[in-house]
Amino acid sequence: MMLLHGPVFFLALSVLAVRHGVESKCQDWSMKKDSTDVCCKKCNPGNHLIDNCGPDPHALCAPCGNDTYISDTSQKNCLRCTQCTSMMRVKVKCSASSDTVCECSHGFRCGDKKCPFCVQECVKGQQPKGRKCEPCPPGTYNDQIHQSCIMWRKCTQPDHQIIFSGTAVSNVVCGPKRQPDQTTSPDNTPTESPSDQKPLISPPDNSSVPVESKVIVILVTFGLICIMIPIFTILYLEWKRKTIDKPPGTKKAQTEETRTAQPEECSFCFPQQEHGSSSQTSMSSLVSEDKAMPLVG
Image (cartoon, rainbow, N blue to C red; front, side):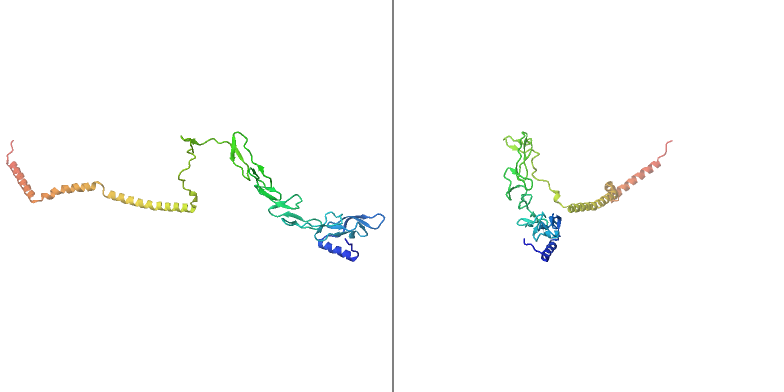
């Protein structure tokens, strides 16, 4: 690096200091033996060492330039800031005292702890293969993010069997063997037990009927009941009133009176009047004869 002297040097230092917001100064220095010069041991953060010793401690350090940084201020050279490229993005910008912090874009993750590159992030049912992913091979599964696939479980106990088969994201589920619940027909054909048989006609599913429709049906039914009860009550009272006004024996009594009255009407007929007259004459003659007979003492 070409060193600048005089006013130009201090002007350059001032420009760098303003650009980075870093003060150009030696942080730790000491006097040189048998001399008036000072020697700088450590510069301020963001400054690199220009000369180890000199008459002015402020002139021994200078801030790093654009897109450079230095973490060890006892060094003379600044380092180039890391550029986040490809599948990486900037998490923390570069400064005069620290490098850029990069992170992987969505769907990717760092290849190692220092994150120099990104690899594809494997989801459940996959496993890493290089910088990409591959599906779990048959007989294996992975229920974690970015992990290797492992073999399915085996049901080793004698009284256990596979209840649920394994998948790419789940392991095999083992459990006790189920008791046989099927009967055998005479032709050795297994048939379903009555409890397992499904009805030919499934009951209607009332869950699909809206609640508002149910409420309307109930209200209409209740209203019809309230209307019909008074109507039936009026009809019943009217029928009962007519029954009381004309008792069952009235018609029969009128019939007997009619039959009895017929002879009286016939007594006014001419032949019967003659018969009645003769009868009255005979009775009068008998009474007269009785009166004429003397009384025996």
